Image 1 (cartoon, rainbow, N blue to C red):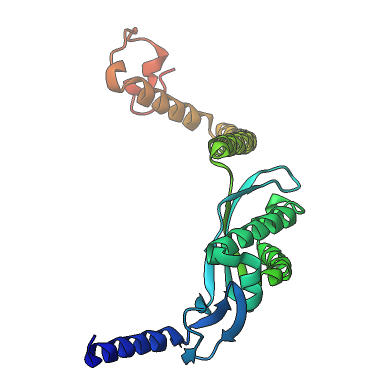
Image 2 (cartoon, rainbow, N blue to C red):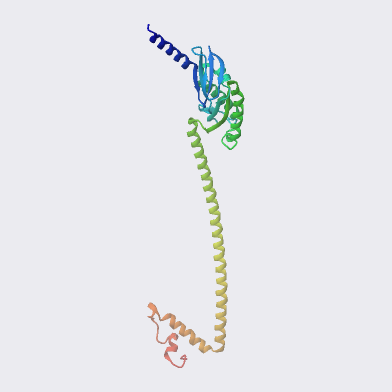
Length: 291
């Protein structure tokens, strides 16, 4: 082999050694230097770093806050009204050495599986200690804080810091939604019937009161009218009596004219009567009654 070939092999080998010894740590990452599976050093500062070539290898973990959506979980509160709870968590790797020791080569997948079990256990225990109305009210904030605090304690063994836990929604199971809707609809219909019945009862009371008031008003008006007519008739009769007492002849003449006016009008203008009748006394003479 020529000297040029040997030099090329040496340079290539040197290149392999250098490239196997240098690695870059991103500012968003933390790196572990492993030797035969054991942690030898931690690289947390961004930039170039070195390791022993071919003997040591690098494992990098994301140092940013991660999001984990848990699977929908069915819980049973104190009032036995089952709910399906959907939650999520925010977490980050706080201790990469402890994290590696806890999950091994499983990495984030195994860690998230264990975090999910922790959250499910805490969610089932805490939400099972209250009734469903508390879960569905503003008190849910304090329940989430309790779940988060308990999850923080348990996740420390994984080298993980749980930043936050939130319940996205808490609904009835699909199988119960239709039955619950029908029960709510029946309840609203019953309330509507009760309201209509109370309204009809109130309307009948108002109508009865109005009818009684109307009858009373009409009766009082009729009574007053009868009294006024009676008083007027009495006054008229008194006037007639006084007029008759003063001038009987004039009174008789007035009564005859009234009789003529009533008898000789409209279709009642034809009379069958003898010419000598007293009805025509004031028509036979222009001076008075014919004796």
